[in-house]
Amino acid sequence: MNENESGNRAKIIEILDKSEGGIVSGAVIAKELGISRQAVSKAIASLRDEGLDIASAPQKGYSFASPPEHTERLSPSLLDYMMRNEKKYAKSFFFEEIDSTQSVVKELASQHAPAGIVVMAEKQTAGRGRRGRKWIAPYGKNLYFSVLLRPKLKPGEVQLLNLAAGLAVKFAVDSMCGISAELKWPNDIMISGKKICGILSEAAGEPDRIYHAVTGIGVNVNMERGDLPDEIKSTATSIFIETGKKTYRTELASRILKHFAELASQTEESNGLKELLTLYRDNCSTIGREVRIIQDDSETIGLATGVTEEGALKAETPEGEMIFAAADVFHLRIN
Ligand code: BTN
Image (cartoon, rainbow, N blue to C red):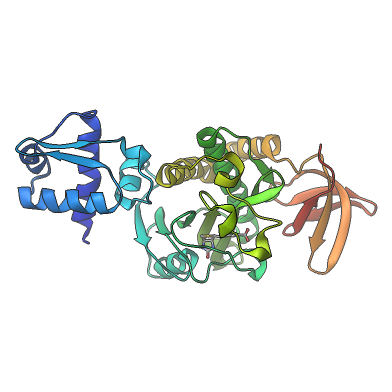
């Protein structure tokens, strides 16, 4: 697929969406895009392959049989359309199956790809989690994507991207799924005490600046109970398992990406950062809780009191105030 073809597909979605269910002829679409009618019907066939529900009326033209945002499959063209007004979004690359979206974006970053590139996959065969863990990523039910950023941050501030991404996922899930997901420091999103989302930010740079950061987000969206491998059954869940409702994944991805674009850019200037940290403290359920903190091989019990300007966790412990830049945190009491 070349860039024009993917751009044309997003534009066809826009033309049909604007007509609000009305029929638009192939000739009108061809004229608006400056392409042949044959190219229009090829693009329509591809959009149907992506899951968009487009009806065709003989001799008349095309219309949406159901709204594009109700597309069940992951659709790169629909994502391009939904993100069309976002200045920070560059383009998405989509894979049916890949080892890890994180690795693909890192590779693109080393080839000077621009910030705002998003790589998504229906399945990952070697999905990576924090602290060298694996991320289980079966086909066709969830969201797995990585975003390339080139923020003005120091290596010690990369955790801020995790906080921004955690908030972005919480806001998107809450607004779309009618629930209040829990945000556990730094960026685990939980429902009923079990994880539905993991976030991993990795950066490359020098001691005083980063060249790029790659933020990877995995959300368990429509996975059913039987899809959960035994090893994660007691700690993981999905939006579907908890709400009983299927969620349109492309729409969810676009909401996450829009929130993330805005929140991540706040990390780069001081007022924005202050607002981001306030928003984070207000929405992170770890703050004010008794927690068990595991860092490397040591365990600390304490009261989580806040986050620093670098996104590290502050806790009151029997040894006094301690700061944890990266650790696993467990909430000890349900408030
Ligand atoms: C965690 O351990 O909680 C972080 C999990 C991050 C998983 C995502 S899925 C998309 C991206 N690609 C990967 O290989 N990992 C991240």
